Amino acid sequence: MNNAVMHSELIAQNPAALRRFYVDLFGWDEEDYPEAQYTILRHGDGAGIDLAIGAAMPGLKAGPTTYVSVDDVDAYVAKLQRIPGVSIIQAPYDIEGMGRFAVFTDPEGNRIGLWQLPRA
Image 1 (cartoon, helix red, strand yellow):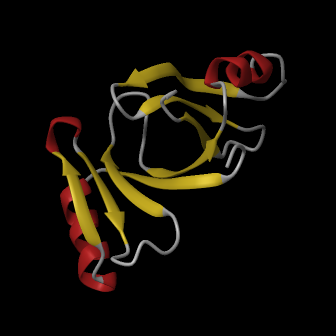
Image 2 (image 1 turned 45 degrees about the vertical axis):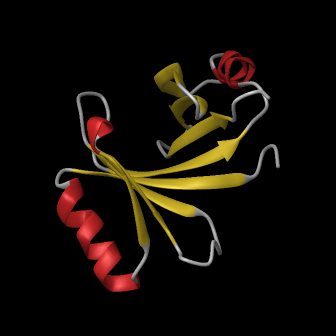
């Protein structure tokens, strides 16, 4: 599944209210990570990709991020650093048991994440 869109995220000023909005609207299941101020919303039958709601923080303002599955986050970040107009806004970072990720903005300013699943 490398290089496939695998996750979508909305960073919010009020993540609890936005989470409630989507749960009430679509009836999605919630997987809450309160220590990270993060909730993953999924359709009960597993259809589609998940949508996560996270809190805005310094350097990460409200808005959408689309995540792409990659086999080596660091290699992609190195490649991105050579492309004019691209900014790395979250350097590669490990989340124990979940994988490694980074976030960049493309030349048009769109926020895209890279996600590397944990190696078996």
